[in-house]
Length: 331
Image (tube, rainbow, N blue to C red; front, top):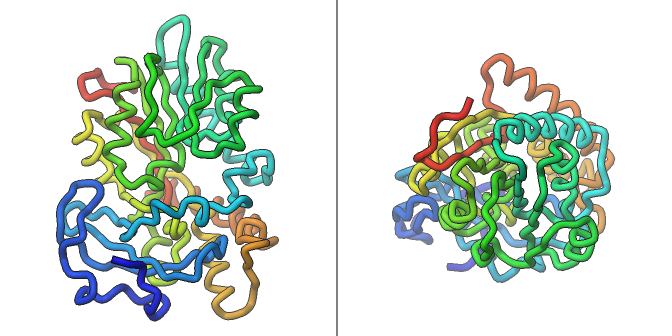
Protein backbone atom coordinates (compact mmCIF):
# COMPACT_ATOMS: atom_id res chain seq x y z
CA UNK A 1 0.00 0.00 0.00
CA UNK A 2 1.35 3.44 -0.94
CA UNK A 3 0.89 6.74 0.84
CA UNK A 4 -2.38 8.40 -0.09
CA UNK A 5 -1.29 11.31 -2.25
CA UNK A 6 -4.75 12.02 -3.64
CA UNK A 7 -6.63 12.58 -0.37
CA UNK A 8 -8.61 15.69 0.44
CA UNK A 9 -6.60 17.41 3.24
CA UNK A 10 -7.90 16.44 6.65
CA UNK A 11 -10.00 13.54 5.37
CA UNK A 12 -9.41 10.02 6.62
CA UNK A 13 -8.51 7.40 4.00
CA UNK A 14 -11.30 5.37 2.48
CA UNK A 15 -11.77 2.01 4.16
CA UNK A 16 -12.72 0.67 0.75
CA UNK A 17 -9.23 1.54 -0.47
CA UNK A 18 -7.40 0.08 2.52
CA UNK A 19 -9.46 -2.98 3.43
CA UNK A 20 -9.54 -4.24 7.01
CA UNK A 21 -6.31 -6.22 7.21
CA UNK A 22 -3.95 -3.47 8.39
CA UNK A 23 -1.98 -4.96 11.30
CA UNK A 24 -1.45 -3.09 14.57
CA UNK A 25 2.27 -2.80 15.42
CA UNK A 26 1.48 -3.04 19.15
CA UNK A 27 -0.92 -5.97 19.53
CA UNK A 28 -0.64 -7.45 16.00
CA UNK A 29 -4.44 -7.47 15.58
CA UNK A 30 -5.82 -6.93 12.08
CA UNK A 31 -8.84 -4.84 11.21
CA UNK A 32 -7.64 -1.33 12.07
CA UNK A 33 -9.93 1.49 10.97
CA UNK A 34 -8.86 4.70 9.19
CA UNK A 35 -8.41 7.50 11.71
CA UNK A 36 -6.90 10.60 10.10
CA UNK A 37 -4.62 11.85 7.39
CA UNK A 38 -1.80 14.32 7.89
CA UNK A 39 1.08 16.05 6.15
CA UNK A 40 4.52 17.19 7.23
CA UNK A 41 3.47 20.67 8.29
CA UNK A 42 6.61 21.19 10.39
CA UNK A 43 9.55 20.53 8.05
CA UNK A 44 7.89 20.23 4.63
CA UNK A 45 10.03 17.17 3.92
CA UNK A 46 7.30 15.73 1.68
CA UNK A 47 4.15 16.93 -0.06
CA UNK A 48 2.45 13.57 0.50
CA UNK A 49 -0.54 12.92 2.70
CA UNK A 50 0.00 10.06 5.13
CA UNK A 51 -2.63 7.77 6.67
CA UNK A 52 -3.11 7.05 10.38
CA UNK A 53 -5.16 4.08 11.55
CA UNK A 54 -6.66 3.12 14.89
CA UNK A 55 -6.45 -0.46 16.13
CA UNK A 56 -9.93 -1.88 16.75
CA UNK A 57 -8.59 -4.01 19.61
CA UNK A 58 -6.24 -1.82 21.64
CA UNK A 59 -6.83 1.70 20.31
CA UNK A 60 -3.21 2.38 19.29
CA UNK A 61 -2.81 4.89 16.44
CA UNK A 62 -0.25 4.09 13.79
CA UNK A 63 1.01 5.29 10.44
CA UNK A 64 0.60 2.95 7.50
CA UNK A 65 2.70 2.55 5.50
CA UNK A 66 5.62 3.57 7.71
CA UNK A 67 8.39 5.33 5.75
CA UNK A 68 11.10 3.07 7.16
CA UNK A 69 13.30 3.48 4.09
CA UNK A 70 13.07 7.28 3.98
CA UNK A 71 14.75 8.33 7.22
CA UNK A 72 17.25 10.67 5.57
CA UNK A 73 14.36 12.44 3.84
CA UNK A 74 11.93 12.79 6.74
CA UNK A 75 14.63 13.74 9.30
CA UNK A 76 16.26 16.72 7.54
CA UNK A 77 19.59 18.21 8.67
CA UNK A 78 17.77 21.05 10.48
CA UNK A 79 15.62 18.65 12.54
CA UNK A 80 15.21 20.07 16.05
CA UNK A 81 16.74 17.05 17.83
CA UNK A 82 20.03 17.64 16.01
CA UNK A 83 20.38 21.08 17.64
CA UNK A 84 20.61 20.26 21.34
CA UNK A 85 22.50 23.49 22.09
CA UNK A 86 19.65 25.71 20.85
CA UNK A 87 17.63 26.08 24.06
CA UNK A 88 14.74 28.49 24.49
CA UNK A 89 13.57 29.69 27.89
CA UNK A 90 10.68 27.18 27.75
CA UNK A 91 13.13 24.37 27.04
CA UNK A 92 15.33 25.42 29.94
CA UNK A 93 12.35 25.32 32.30
CA UNK A 94 11.37 21.88 30.98
CA UNK A 95 14.93 20.63 31.45
CA UNK A 96 14.93 21.78 35.10
CA UNK A 97 11.70 19.88 35.73
CA UNK A 98 13.09 16.81 33.97
CA UNK A 99 16.22 17.01 36.14
CA UNK A 100 14.06 16.84 39.28
CA UNK A 101 12.44 13.67 37.94
CA UNK A 102 15.79 12.11 37.09
CA UNK A 103 17.23 12.98 40.51
CA UNK A 104 14.30 11.21 42.20
CA UNK A 105 14.76 8.08 40.08
CA UNK A 106 18.51 7.98 40.67
CA UNK A 107 18.07 8.41 44.42
CA UNK A 108 15.88 5.29 44.47
CA UNK A 109 18.58 3.14 42.88
CA UNK A 110 20.99 1.26 45.15
CA UNK A 111 24.62 0.45 44.60
CA UNK A 112 27.97 2.19 44.56
CA UNK A 113 28.06 2.56 40.77
CA UNK A 114 25.27 3.18 38.28
CA UNK A 115 25.14 2.66 34.52
CA UNK A 116 22.82 4.69 32.28
CA UNK A 117 21.74 4.18 28.67
CA UNK A 118 20.11 6.93 26.58
CA UNK A 119 18.34 5.64 23.47
CA UNK A 120 18.10 8.40 20.89
CA UNK A 121 20.43 10.44 23.10
CA UNK A 122 22.22 12.32 20.31
CA UNK A 123 25.51 13.78 21.49
CA UNK A 124 24.91 12.76 25.11
CA UNK A 125 23.85 16.11 26.56
CA UNK A 126 21.18 14.45 28.74
CA UNK A 127 23.76 11.99 30.07
CA UNK A 128 25.95 14.96 30.99
CA UNK A 129 23.07 16.23 33.13
CA UNK A 130 22.63 12.82 34.77
CA UNK A 131 26.32 12.55 35.67
CA UNK A 132 26.00 15.93 37.35
CA UNK A 133 23.00 14.75 39.37
CA UNK A 134 24.58 11.64 40.88
CA UNK A 135 28.29 10.98 41.33
CA UNK A 136 27.65 7.22 41.29
CA UNK A 137 26.99 7.29 37.54
CA UNK A 138 30.15 5.63 36.25
CA UNK A 139 29.21 4.39 32.78
CA UNK A 140 27.08 6.08 30.14
CA UNK A 141 26.01 4.80 26.74
CA UNK A 142 24.25 6.46 23.80
CA UNK A 143 22.36 4.61 21.08
CA UNK A 144 21.46 6.89 18.19
CA UNK A 145 21.07 6.87 14.40
CA UNK A 146 22.86 10.20 13.91
CA UNK A 147 26.51 9.63 12.92
CA UNK A 148 27.23 13.34 13.27
CA UNK A 149 26.57 13.07 17.02
CA UNK A 150 29.04 10.26 17.62
CA UNK A 151 32.25 12.31 17.78
CA UNK A 152 30.73 14.80 20.23
CA UNK A 153 29.30 12.06 22.45
CA UNK A 154 32.60 10.19 22.62
CA UNK A 155 34.46 13.44 23.39
CA UNK A 156 32.09 13.89 26.34
CA UNK A 157 33.05 10.49 27.69
CA UNK A 158 30.06 8.42 26.55
CA UNK A 159 30.08 5.13 24.71
CA UNK A 160 28.23 5.39 21.39
CA UNK A 161 26.45 2.87 19.20
CA UNK A 162 25.37 4.24 15.82
CA UNK A 163 22.34 2.26 14.73
CA UNK A 164 18.91 0.99 15.71
CA UNK A 165 18.34 0.02 19.32
CA UNK A 166 16.98 -3.32 18.08
CA UNK A 167 20.50 -4.04 16.77
CA UNK A 168 22.32 -2.89 19.90
CA UNK A 169 24.18 -5.61 21.78
CA UNK A 170 26.35 -5.31 24.89
CA UNK A 171 27.39 -7.24 27.97
CA UNK A 172 26.59 -4.20 30.11
CA UNK A 173 23.42 -4.03 32.18
CA UNK A 174 21.93 -0.64 32.95
CA UNK A 175 20.28 0.74 36.07
CA UNK A 176 18.49 3.49 34.16
CA UNK A 177 17.45 3.53 30.52
CA UNK A 178 16.06 6.69 28.92
CA UNK A 179 13.55 6.44 26.11
CA UNK A 180 12.58 10.08 25.77
CA UNK A 181 10.38 10.94 22.78
CA UNK A 182 11.63 7.82 21.03
CA UNK A 183 9.23 4.88 21.14
CA UNK A 184 6.69 6.64 18.94
CA UNK A 185 9.35 6.78 16.20
CA UNK A 186 9.89 3.01 15.85
CA UNK A 187 8.01 0.45 13.77
CA UNK A 188 7.82 -2.24 16.47
CA UNK A 189 7.63 -0.73 19.97
CA UNK A 190 7.22 -4.14 21.59
CA UNK A 191 10.49 -5.35 20.11
CA UNK A 192 12.23 -2.23 21.44
CA UNK A 193 10.88 -2.78 24.96
CA UNK A 194 11.87 -6.45 24.95
CA UNK A 195 15.36 -5.54 23.71
CA UNK A 196 15.79 -2.98 26.48
CA UNK A 197 14.53 -5.46 29.06
CA UNK A 198 17.50 -7.68 28.25
CA UNK A 199 19.84 -4.77 29.05
CA UNK A 200 18.20 -3.79 32.35
CA UNK A 201 19.41 -4.72 35.83
CA UNK A 202 16.88 -6.36 38.18
CA UNK A 203 16.50 -3.04 40.05
CA UNK A 204 16.55 -1.02 36.84
CA UNK A 205 14.07 1.59 35.59
CA UNK A 206 13.12 2.54 32.05
CA UNK A 207 11.93 6.16 31.81
CA UNK A 208 9.71 6.77 28.79
CA UNK A 209 8.20 9.99 27.52
CA UNK A 210 5.71 9.71 24.66
CA UNK A 211 2.62 11.48 23.27
CA UNK A 212 -0.81 10.85 24.74
CA UNK A 213 -3.64 10.45 22.22
CA UNK A 214 -6.28 10.82 24.94
CA UNK A 215 -5.94 14.59 25.21
CA UNK A 216 -7.86 17.75 24.42
CA UNK A 217 -5.61 18.87 21.57
CA UNK A 218 -5.54 15.37 20.04
CA UNK A 219 -9.32 15.51 19.79
CA UNK A 220 -9.57 19.13 18.63
CA UNK A 221 -6.98 18.74 15.89
CA UNK A 222 -7.62 15.11 14.91
CA UNK A 223 -8.35 16.11 11.30
CA UNK A 224 -6.23 19.27 11.31
CA UNK A 225 -2.63 18.05 11.47
CA UNK A 226 -2.43 17.54 15.24
CA UNK A 227 1.10 18.32 16.37
CA UNK A 228 1.35 14.94 18.13
CA UNK A 229 1.27 13.19 14.77
CA UNK A 230 4.66 14.83 14.02
CA UNK A 231 3.96 13.42 10.59
CA UNK A 232 5.60 11.40 9.11
CA UNK A 233 8.06 10.80 11.96
CA UNK A 234 5.68 9.47 14.64
CA UNK A 235 4.70 5.96 13.62
CA UNK A 236 2.97 4.53 16.73
CA UNK A 237 0.98 6.59 19.26
CA UNK A 238 -0.50 5.53 22.61
CA UNK A 239 -2.70 6.51 25.49
CA UNK A 240 -2.18 5.42 29.10
CA UNK A 241 -4.31 2.29 28.82
CA UNK A 242 -2.87 0.75 25.67
CA UNK A 243 0.73 1.62 26.55
CA UNK A 244 0.32 -0.09 29.93
CA UNK A 245 -1.08 -3.11 28.13
CA UNK A 246 1.93 -3.26 25.80
CA UNK A 247 4.37 -2.88 28.72
CA UNK A 248 2.76 -5.79 30.57
CA UNK A 249 2.95 -7.95 27.46
CA UNK A 250 6.69 -7.22 27.24
CA UNK A 251 7.44 -8.23 30.85
CA UNK A 252 7.19 -4.88 32.63
CA UNK A 253 4.87 -3.13 34.98
CA UNK A 254 4.26 0.57 35.36
CA UNK A 255 5.78 1.73 38.64
CA UNK A 256 4.91 5.40 38.16
CA UNK A 257 2.87 7.35 35.64
CA UNK A 258 2.18 11.05 35.09
CA UNK A 259 0.98 13.42 32.42
CA UNK A 260 3.00 16.42 31.36
CA UNK A 261 2.48 19.44 29.17
CA UNK A 262 2.21 19.01 25.40
CA UNK A 263 2.89 22.62 24.46
CA UNK A 264 4.87 21.78 21.28
CA UNK A 265 1.84 19.88 19.94
CA UNK A 266 -0.47 22.83 20.62
CA UNK A 267 2.00 25.20 18.97
CA UNK A 268 2.38 23.02 15.89
CA UNK A 269 -1.37 22.48 15.55
CA UNK A 270 -2.17 26.20 15.75
CA UNK A 271 0.63 27.28 13.41
CA UNK A 272 -0.50 24.64 10.91
CA UNK A 273 -4.02 26.10 11.04
CA UNK A 274 -2.65 29.61 10.49
CA UNK A 275 -0.49 28.39 7.61
CA UNK A 276 -3.49 26.81 5.90
CA UNK A 277 -5.14 30.24 5.93
CA UNK A 278 -2.01 31.87 4.56
CA UNK A 279 -1.48 33.94 7.71
CA UNK A 280 1.98 32.50 8.47
CA UNK A 281 4.63 30.87 6.31
CA UNK A 282 6.48 27.66 7.12
CA UNK A 283 9.16 26.38 4.74
CA UNK A 284 11.74 23.60 4.66
CA UNK A 285 14.42 26.26 5.23
CA UNK A 286 12.58 27.76 8.20
CA UNK A 287 10.62 24.92 9.80
CA UNK A 288 7.88 25.42 12.32
CA UNK A 289 10.11 25.18 15.41
CA UNK A 290 12.04 28.21 14.15
CA UNK A 291 9.00 30.37 13.48
CA UNK A 292 9.00 33.37 15.87
CA UNK A 293 5.47 32.54 17.06
CA UNK A 294 6.37 28.98 18.06
CA UNK A 295 8.15 29.70 21.39
CA UNK A 296 5.39 32.16 22.35
CA UNK A 297 2.68 29.58 21.72
CA UNK A 298 4.73 26.87 23.44
CA UNK A 299 5.22 28.96 26.57
CA UNK A 300 1.55 29.89 26.78
CA UNK A 301 0.23 26.39 26.27
CA UNK A 302 2.78 24.89 28.66
CA UNK A 303 1.21 27.04 31.38
CA UNK A 304 -2.28 26.12 30.15
CA UNK A 305 -1.55 22.38 30.21
CA UNK A 306 0.12 22.44 33.61
CA UNK A 307 -2.87 24.31 35.05
CA UNK A 308 -5.29 21.82 33.49
CA UNK A 309 -3.24 18.95 34.88
CA UNK A 310 -3.76 20.28 38.40
CA UNK A 311 -7.50 20.12 37.75
CA UNK A 312 -7.39 16.52 36.54
CA UNK A 313 -6.83 17.16 32.86
CA UNK A 314 -4.81 14.83 30.66
CA UNK A 315 -2.25 16.81 28.61
CA UNK A 316 -0.82 15.34 25.45
CA UNK A 317 2.46 13.93 26.75
CA UNK A 318 3.03 11.30 29.40
CA UNK A 319 5.92 9.99 31.48
CA UNK A 320 5.96 6.26 32.21
CA UNK A 321 8.43 4.49 34.48
CA UNK A 322 8.77 0.76 33.86
CA UNK A 323 10.37 -1.89 36.05
CA UNK A 324 10.67 -5.64 35.53
CA UNK A 325 7.34 -7.28 36.36
CA UNK A 326 8.94 -9.54 38.97
CA UNK A 327 10.21 -6.52 40.97
CA UNK A 328 8.53 -5.03 44.02
CA UNK A 329 6.54 -1.79 43.78
CA UNK A 330 8.53 1.45 43.64
CA UNK A 331 7.22 4.48 45.50
